[in-house]
Image 1: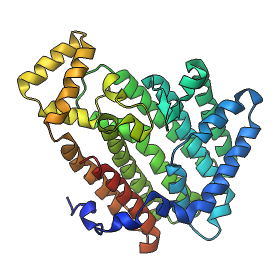
Image 2 (image 1 turned 90 degrees about the horizontal axis):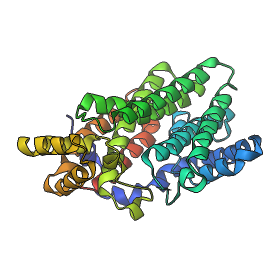
Image 3 (image 1 turned 180 degrees about the horizontal axis):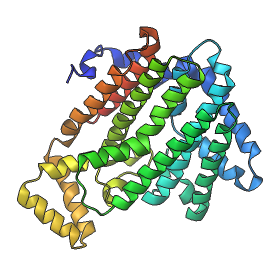
Length: 342
């Protein structure tokens, strides 16, 4: 592996690199995106406007639209309707997956506020997620070429496939890394990849830049999900603003849990597996939680996280230094976020 990206970052980078500094060059685009999303709420049937507005007003950092903006960066990008529409499409798909995720995980808090399921009930939440998916595809159909709609539809299908695969893997003792990476590529990284790919596509970037940006998005998405899996186990709920610990409670064997199982002595692992298979799930979970502090899990996971970041960084070869800068900064910032848990 090449020298870690964290080792290439100046020691004073924390003073100059922040989410706000990264977002600043695309703030006008994001403001136009928010205005566009509000118009979309008005275009929906009145029965669902309140719920959809609630979802949009409690969303996160708009990371996928930010990737769209930087991938399509050129003169006048802030008001480019194709680029704004694309950011809205991917944000709606992402938010739909979160609404459905919270139902599956029985989560009650998201971004420091009640989830849609907690506020409106599970039945309504399912349908709100469906409305978001459907409206995103309606917007995708407005492009002159079918390529955008096809790519968005395929990405949506892959995200849902990843969620289905993970759902059916619950309570199954699958400690296989290939299975884990397949799931996170489908359910998380694919939307990062398509945001970068289509942002460059609608802005008529060259094919090598499009391919490189798609690869960047895929590797960054994997790194981001690994970080999110660490957060689920080691962060405080008040700090992160969402229900935590749901992966372990729901039988999702994420990378940190896979590493933990590999770290246990053979007898301990067999004893835990038998306890789990006998149906003593709550006891088994409590037992595993107590083991988290006995091993350097975060440090061990960081090795694979860093590899994803390195691969993302290396995917930008076709871009000029100026074009690559914001993507490198995003990758560096995610690395800094992970480093807080070391």
